[in-house]
Length: 507
Image 1 (cartoon, rainbow, N blue to C red):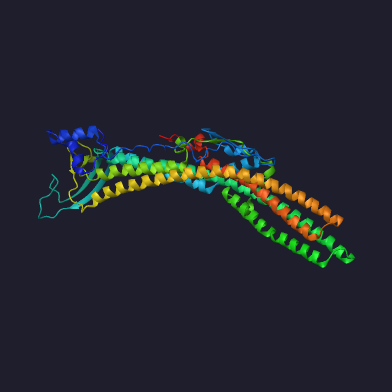
Image 2: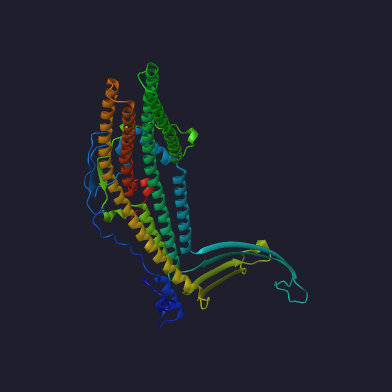
C-alpha cells in the first residue's frame, strides 16, 4: 500500500494497527511495504497559447546578405545540429571541436557519473548485508576462576570464523524515498549537463559570428584609413600649389586620426573574441588558429521552428532540472516522515569456535543466532519534527523556483522572437542608410573634384559613410546571433542526441 501524504507518526503507525500479534504484523509490513510521504506529480504545463502579446509569423526582408525574411513555424521540431542551418563548414568544425574538448562539458559529464554512482550505492540498501570474519585469540585464564574449555586448561587458543547477515526491511519506504530523491538529483545533474551543452554550442556560434563581424569592421575601418590617408597626401600637394587651405588639411588630418583611434578597440575586441572562442573549444589562445568565417558566407535560417508553449517545459534543460529538484525535495518529505517511524532490523549470525585451527567446523563447534530488533524514536528534542517541517518548506521553495524558471524561459523565448523582428527592421534601415551614405559620398567626391564644394563636406560624407557601413555590419551580425539565441532559448534540440539524452527524458 502507498500513502499519498502522512503528516505525523501517529497517522503512519495506523498502517500497523490491528488485532494481530506482533510477529504476523511485522511480516505483513515487510510484505506490504508502506511508502510514506506524498507521491510526486509533475507540474502542469502553463495555460498560455503563445510567447508574445502579438503573434509573430514573419520578419521583413532586405536585399543584403543576411536580410532574408524569416518565417516562424509554430510547433516545429528543432534539429539537434541546428547550427548547420547557417551552412558554414567552419562553424560546424568549431562546434565539433568544442563538444569534444570543452572542459566544462567534460566536468558536467563527470558530475553525472558521480550522481549515478551515488544512486546505485543507495540501491544497495535494498539487499541484505553479508560479512565474514575470522578471529584468533590467545587466552590466559586466572587460576582463581574456573577454566572455560572442557579440557580445564587455563591457557588456550580460540579460533572463530563466522558469517553475519543483517537486513533492514524498508517497511515505511525510507530507502525507497531516499533512492527516489537521489535518482531525481541524478536526472537533475543530467539536465544540468544538457544546459552546459546547449550553452556551449550557442556561445560558440554567437562568438564566431561576433568575431567575423568585428573582422569585417576592422577591414572597413582600415579601408577608410587608407582612403583618408590618400586624401591627406593629396591635400598636402594641393596646399603646396595653393589649391587647398591649411584649414582643409588640418581637418582631414584630424578625421584621419579619429578613424585610426577607432581601430585599436576593434582589434582588441577581435583578439578577445578569438581567445574566448579558443577557450570554448578547449584550446589555449596561443594554440588556436583564427577561424576563417565570413559573414557573407553565412546563410540566415529562414524557416525557424518554434516549440509550442505546452512542450517547451519538457525541452528546456533548466526547466527540467528545476522539475527534478522539485521531485527530490518531494521525496525528502517521505524520508523525514519515515525517520519518525519504527525501524526494524533482522540479524543472523553463524560460525564455529574451536581451540585449534584444525578443529574449526568439526561437529560440536558450530553456533548460530537469529534476532529481530524494533526501534521507535520517542524523544529527539523536536529534531525529527523540525526536519519534516524543513523538508516541506524546501518543497515549497523548489516549487516557487520551478515557477520562476518557467517564467524566465518564456521571457527568454519572447525576447528572442521580438529581437529577430526588430533586427530585421534595423537591418533594413541600416541597409538604406548605408546605400544613401555611399551615394552621398560619391556625389560629394565629384563636387569636390569639380570645385563645387569644400573638403569639409567631403569629411562629413566620409565619416557618415564609415559609420553607416559599420552599423550595417553590426545589424547583419545581430540577425545571425539572435537567431542562434532563439535556438538556445527553445532548448537547442538536445533531446535528439541519444549520446547525451540517455533514456531518462521526460519520464
